[in-house]
Amino acid sequence: MPISMRWPVFNQVRRRQELMDHMMQRLGVDVLTAIWADQGQAFVEARGRCRNCLHESECRNWLESSEALPLPPDFCPNTNFFRKCGLLGSYGLWRERRPAD
Image (tube, rainbow, N blue to C red; front, side, top):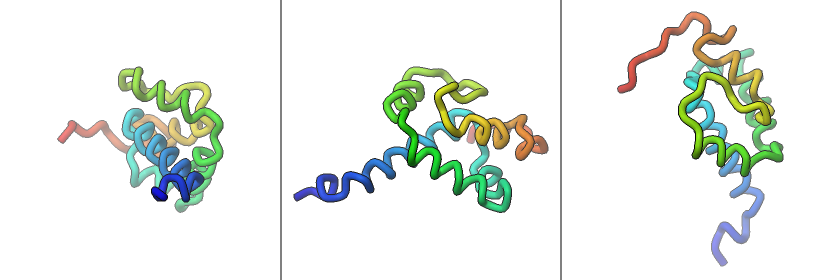
């Protein structure tokens, strides 16, 4: 039996974490800023919100169809977190956009 059939919840969590990572990349959220926000607590809470989110398919569709936008979609439970960690957010205010490598 494939592991995906034995671990459906694990696979759901993994998919949602990948979506969160992709969303952060799309929105220009600096990973280190996100991880260090509120000494890591904000990131842990954001992961939890993503893990429990009921909008997985909407999120995937938005990521697949949208261009890079500065704001997350309205349905996202991590909208405030992403805004705070973005280029102009309160956690990331000191940063400047870095050129793509």
